[in-house]
Image (cartoon, rainbow, N blue to C red; front, side):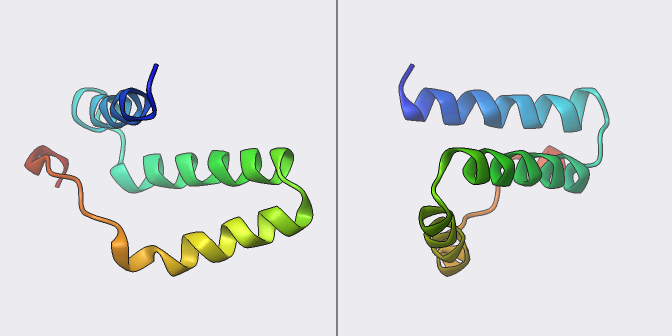
Length: 72
Protein backbone atom coordinates (compact mmCIF):
# COMPACT_ATOMS: atom_id res chain seq x y z
CA UNK A 1 0.00 0.00 0.00
CA UNK A 2 1.36 3.41 -0.95
CA UNK A 3 1.42 6.37 1.43
CA UNK A 4 -1.32 8.01 -0.68
CA UNK A 5 -3.49 4.88 -0.41
CA UNK A 6 -2.94 4.73 3.34
CA UNK A 7 -3.84 8.42 3.64
CA UNK A 8 -7.06 7.87 1.68
CA UNK A 9 -7.92 4.86 3.84
CA UNK A 10 -7.65 6.95 7.02
CA UNK A 11 -9.61 9.75 5.36
CA UNK A 12 -12.40 7.32 4.48
CA UNK A 13 -12.40 5.95 8.04
CA UNK A 14 -12.82 9.48 9.35
CA UNK A 15 -15.65 10.31 6.96
CA UNK A 16 -17.39 7.03 7.80
CA UNK A 17 -17.15 7.68 11.53
CA UNK A 18 -18.50 11.21 11.18
CA UNK A 19 -21.13 10.79 8.47
CA UNK A 20 -22.34 7.21 8.93
CA UNK A 21 -21.70 6.63 12.63
CA UNK A 22 -22.48 10.23 13.65
CA UNK A 23 -19.37 10.76 15.79
CA UNK A 24 -18.27 14.33 16.44
CA UNK A 25 -15.57 15.31 13.95
CA UNK A 26 -13.53 17.14 16.59
CA UNK A 27 -13.61 14.11 18.89
CA UNK A 28 -12.38 11.96 15.99
CA UNK A 29 -9.59 14.46 15.27
CA UNK A 30 -8.56 14.50 18.93
CA UNK A 31 -8.37 10.69 19.06
CA UNK A 32 -6.28 10.54 15.88
CA UNK A 33 -3.94 13.27 17.13
CA UNK A 34 -3.52 11.53 20.49
CA UNK A 35 -2.74 8.21 18.79
CA UNK A 36 -0.26 9.86 16.41
CA UNK A 37 1.54 11.55 19.30
CA UNK A 38 1.77 8.24 21.17
CA UNK A 39 3.21 6.54 18.09
CA UNK A 40 5.79 9.30 17.62
CA UNK A 41 6.71 9.22 21.31
CA UNK A 42 7.16 5.43 21.17
CA UNK A 43 8.98 5.13 17.85
CA UNK A 44 11.27 8.18 17.89
CA UNK A 45 14.23 9.16 20.01
CA UNK A 46 13.57 12.11 22.36
CA UNK A 47 15.45 14.41 19.95
CA UNK A 48 13.55 13.18 16.91
CA UNK A 49 10.25 13.44 18.80
CA UNK A 50 10.98 17.10 19.61
CA UNK A 51 11.93 17.70 15.96
CA UNK A 52 8.67 16.09 14.82
CA UNK A 53 6.60 18.26 17.17
CA UNK A 54 8.42 21.35 15.89
CA UNK A 55 7.81 20.30 12.28
CA UNK A 56 4.10 19.75 12.98
CA UNK A 57 3.74 23.18 14.56
CA UNK A 58 5.65 24.90 11.77
CA UNK A 59 3.53 23.23 9.06
CA UNK A 60 0.18 24.36 10.50
CA UNK A 61 -0.25 26.98 7.76
CA UNK A 62 0.15 24.33 5.05
CA UNK A 63 -2.77 22.18 6.23
CA UNK A 64 -5.82 22.17 3.98
CA UNK A 65 -9.45 21.69 4.97
CA UNK A 66 -11.27 18.48 4.15
CA UNK A 67 -13.28 18.76 0.96
CA UNK A 68 -16.44 16.94 1.98
CA UNK A 69 -19.24 19.40 2.84
CA UNK A 70 -21.05 16.60 4.69
CA UNK A 71 -18.62 16.92 7.58
CA UNK A 72 -19.89 20.32 8.72
